[in-house]
Image (cartoon, rainbow over the protein chains, first blue to last red):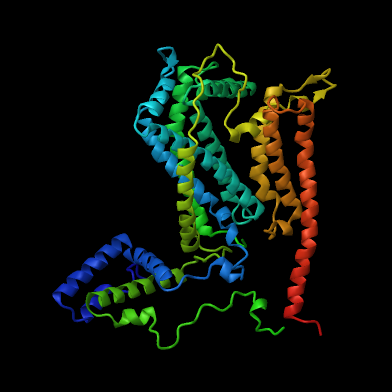
Amino acid sequence: MSLERKDEYDHRAWLKERDLSAIEKTYLMTLIWLDRRFRLVDYLEILENMYYKINLQMPKSHTEQYNLDNKFWYWYPLYALGSFSVLAYLVAAVSGALLGFYYAPSAASSAGNPEAYTQIVAIMQDQNFGFMLRSIHRWSAQVMTAAVFLHMLRVYFTGAYKEPREVNWIIGVILLALTVGFGYTGYLLPWNQLAFWAGQIGVEMALAVPLVGEWTAQLIFGGFSLGQPTLQRMYILHVFVLPFVVTALIALHIGIVWMQGIAEPH
Amino acid sequence: MSDNDPQTETDGSGPGIVAPDDEVPTWRERKERTTGLSRLTYEYFERARREDQDLRQESSYVERDVLGFPSWPHETVRNLAIGSVFIGMLLFLSATMPPHLGDPANPAETPEIILPDWYLYWSFGLLQLGPINPELTILGGEKIMSDELYGVLANAVVFGAIAVIPFLNKGGARRPVEQPFWSSVGVAGVTFAFTTSALAVDNLLPIDPNITFDLTFLLPLVAGAVSYAVLKTMREGYMYNLNQRYYRLRPPR
């Protein structure tokens, strides 16, 4: 047995036996060269597949397949809750990035009020469109959280978490916790009374835990009482740590849904 | 009723989609009719694809048979359509109900109302479970852990319980009627989330705090029991319908 690869698909020989013009030969050589390196076939196949699916005939939807035509259309919004939370997340990301241009996490006092609070007031009163921007950010956060909770309920009551989707359920539970964390860190950023005392509860919860409690309080809240370090850490968690982690987990979550398909029956 | 009645077909072979006749060229035929460079591309890709298929058949790779239906195009197209309505709704809410910005933080003054955002009310309520933190007589009536730690652990227990659900509830049942027990567990859980939220704001409710505390645990049980009874009853009807359809398809001789 020789180590030489027996190539049944000798494209070169195939090229030779065909009588091709110079243009054709150059074109095909380039095509083969690129295909060998970038697997163009696969991408073309995907495109082709999608093209035929939209243009020729849609495959039967679940409702068609099970003759549920007039019974189940009104459940559709419940099945779109997961993508609602992604949409709300995108809206929150864009509006949050715009808000971030005008905000710095500073608890230092300026004219009697904390700097961060003053900046939020400035955003709401002085910036063009600032009031709407903050409104959009806050509402998209609320709606994202609501959508995530309702999405979990939908998945629970339709038994969509069962084999083979257990791993995605657990990723979803982690995402739920992280979404709530997103909301909590964001809730603290305006540094108003509600924010301050919600932070106080957080510190007390952390300190209640034996052994690791004090360490956690110092890591996440920057000490045992609230102040500049707390605000700074909440800000970094909100705009740097959580976005990366949550985006990666959402991608994984959706990727698994894509691989496994939507759970049946509806 | 005859077997050809569309009402009785459950395999999806209903009317509505007409199969193409023999005159309609298939996509393969259309591509084979092309000339020039596109024809060359087609031929090369066909060869490459066959090569891939042969390699795949030689390997031990097995295509898994997962019960599901495609994310593309159904789910994606539908979600984008409903999603645009959703974004509109979001902007409408933002424009009509702007957020409130209260007083600036003041460590010296404790406000009357201390609350997190609404989605953490349940968690905040769980921190107030002190009255059911057991006191052990062995320890001379002392509590084994502080009330605060008890509340924090309750949060962890809730998340843990949600995470292990797929490993407790197995089997093929999907619809609530098919699994009355687990559905009523879900209903009780949702009710508990609401009652603990109410517990978090019990100083704002016009009810005696002790009654609120008792209701926090009673209402979920009641809701669970009621939904269990309802679903059990519904399942009778559900099974009856299944049987009826079965006997319509295969009438008893």
